Image 1 (cartoon, rainbow, N blue to C red):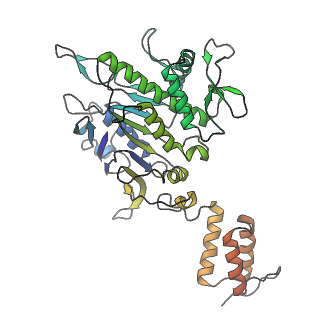
Image 2: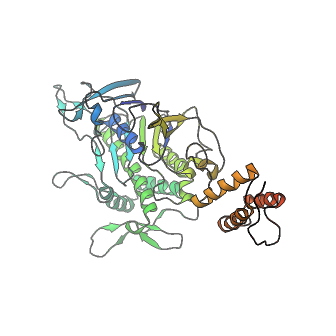
Image 3: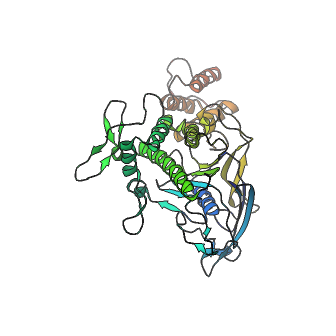
Length: 438
């Protein structure tokens, strides 16, 4: 489990100290403020590898940049404080046996995945004390998730979703049963289930392709499904594949399965319709629980980034401040009134509806409406508060309000009542510019 990150001289802020919760960690904030950056550094701290390009310090901090972190490894917590070596262009870590954070999964925003398995990627020594060379981690591009991760020659680290799903389905194996359960749990409702259909062949391809039986009865090959469905299917597959391969490798080594799983997810709502967003976190937790099965003592930590008010609203029934934490990236002025990026833990509160989340200090909307309607509503509120408005402008605002919001909107009704009492409008249609209200 990742306990803490302490970042100096890298990323969008000069200094960031983050204390992670044991279960859910939700990171919000505007584009470009550092959500994906935090996930990339978290992956590196846990696995000693980068899922993409190596994170470099800002130019002014090349000799002073540090990444500090604490990882819960089995029965102890391991801490390290790593400095950037500008000559080697890499981050130095403490020598010796590294921490073992358990199984680490990273669903990246581009559709790629990364997997670090303590039974296959962890540092090992032979009987003579020599280090055994092992794959550092499994880094899947978006296409490799579907087609497999090749090794030298004819070997493969992973067959990929298409081949594994087809093989599991033919064998009616436990991985296929787990995949079916995962797809069922991740489905948005009972009328739109992700149910595996028959295997099919496609033109000019010898492979058997999995299909999903759609609500309208047609079996659609998985590569022809919508982006949102492919995202969910890939997520279900990597969870099943990662856990199953870990069990196989642990048994081969004569070791017990890991008791810790860390799941990093960037833009969890990517490509998803709101009805899928509304239950995605609850579904992911349920899938993890279903995979672990009887291993009730396995701890699962999720660190996820999201832009979605629907996702945050969906967390209200399951969020537990004792084991969950909400973080928010924001821009705030420094002592010279220059904007600076800060990452702050937010106190959790239930707001009830999606529109209330939009106007909360997480998203900072003034109104849960279009930009044009927001500007108009602000002018309406200002006029009602001051009690002063030109009649001609009042008529124009009335016309715009009717066009933007419609006469069923509660604000339109309040505005009409107030404007007629002030004499700015009459209940009948009026003409002329009118006089300024005193």
